[in-house]
Figure (cartoon, rainbow, N blue to C red):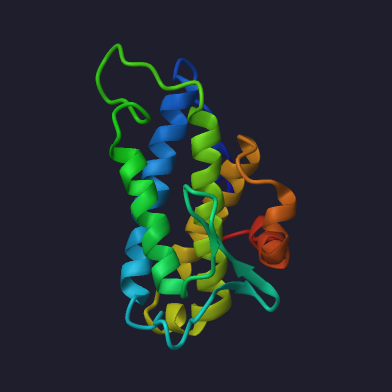
Length: 181
């Protein structure tokens, strides 16, 4: 089996595992890995250098508050808002239960889908605005593997619409076609 196939197998729901448990486990791991990458790049992503949360030439991500107010914070503030939002939800027992006998809410899949859209916004920003720093910090392999895993998992469980992934479609195609030695 090729290493490429390892990720394809890894995203599959194992027999006997609850789909929500599988989604929760991967969501938490994506959060942890993306948080680590963001921490490594935090000195480079500044309000002056990244006044908007850009994920492409004409792609700016907006934050929509709980009061439905649309704002355009600088990228580091957007990332902080998003990662804090996700962390709060992951730590909330009513959303991500860890105790035996506690069920996931009926809105769990919708919550995970929202988190994955946020993960994509951050990943797109990193590739678009900070890839040179990713190279300098020797994080290319980690970022590419994380994104490849993210895309496979997102596609398998229909977590991010393909139209939303479109800005990174050329990279996605390269990752999907890559055959490690």
